[in-house]
Amino acid sequence: MKAKLEDVAKLAGVSPTTVSRMMNNRGYVSEATKQKVRSAMEELHYFPNDIARSLFNKRTNLIGLILPTTANPFFGELTFHIENLCAAHGLKVLLCNSLNRIDKEEQYAEMLMRNQVDGIIVGTHNRGILNYKRTNLAVVAIDRYLSETIPVVSSDNYEGGRLATQRLIGRGCEYILHFNGPAELETPAQLRRQAFEDMMQQRGLPHYTYEMEMPLDREDQLAVIRRALDEHPQADGIFASNDMIAASVIYEAGRRSISIPEDLKVVGYDGTAVTSSLMPQLTTIRQPIEAIANAAITMLLREIEGEFEEKAQQIVLPVELYEGTTA
Image (cartoon, rainbow, N blue to C red; front, top):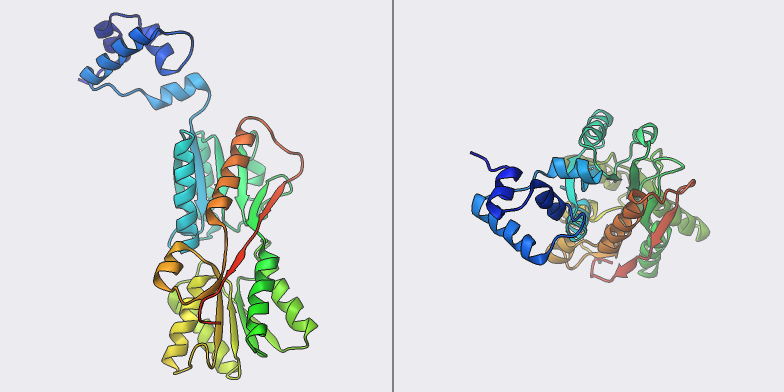
C-alpha cells in the first residue's frame, strides 16, 4: 500500500506534525530529527503530496506557459530557458501550444486557473483573453500587447528592423521585400516592419511587405514567397521576420537558380541556436532569448509576491546583427 505521512512519523518516532513542519519548512526541526524523517521516507518510498503542500503554503509552484507553437525554434529555445530558470526557483511549468487559436487559448487559460497556477507567461497574439480573468493572477507577456495592465518583455524590434534593412542597403540592395505577420496584430514585432518601411522611404527606395499568418507551415510560407518572387522578379534583397521564413526563401531561391548572395541577399530574424547549427551562413538579427526568459521570470516572480503595477511595464532588450554570408 502507498505510504502515508502517519507511517513516516511512526517509523521515524516523531509526531505527524513534526513531519509536516519539516516538509513545509515551517518551524524549528532539529537536524537529527530531519535525518530520521528522511530515512523513514526513503525506506517507505514516501513522496510528499504536492497538492496538499500547496494548500498549506498557499502556493502551487506551478507556472503556465502559453505559446503559439514550440515547433518554431525561437519559442522552442525560449521554452528551454524558461523551464530551466523555473526549475532553479523550484517551479514547474505547464506548457500549452495554442497555435494562435482563440478557442484553444481560452481552454488553456481556464485549465491553468483550475490548476491554481501561481502565474502565466503568454507569447500568443490573442489580446483580451486573459485580461478579464486576471484577478490576483500574475501574468507577463513576451513580445505581445495583451492589456494596459500586463507587463511586456521584448527585444528591441525597431532596432532589429533598422539593422536588417541597413545591412541590405549597405550591401547594395535597392529593391527589398519584407515578410512579416499580419498588420492588425498588436505586437512589438510590428516595429520591425515600421523600421524597414521608414528606412526605405527615407531613401526613396521601392519596398513591399508581404504578410503571413502565424504560425504558418512550410508549404504556406513557400506559397507566399513564390507569389512575392513572381510579382517582383527584380527583388535583390529579402528581410524575413524570422529565420524559418528566411530558410524557405533560400530554398525557393535555390529552386529557381537564384544565387545567394550574388543575385539575392537575405537577412533573417531570431538567431536561435538551431539557426546557428543548421544555417551558420544566414545573416540574421539575434534576439537575446535567454535574457528575455530571465526578465520574464523575474517580473513574474515579483508579481507573484504581490508587486503589481497599475500600468504595464515594458522591458526592451538589445539585439545584435550576426554577419553571415547571405547578406
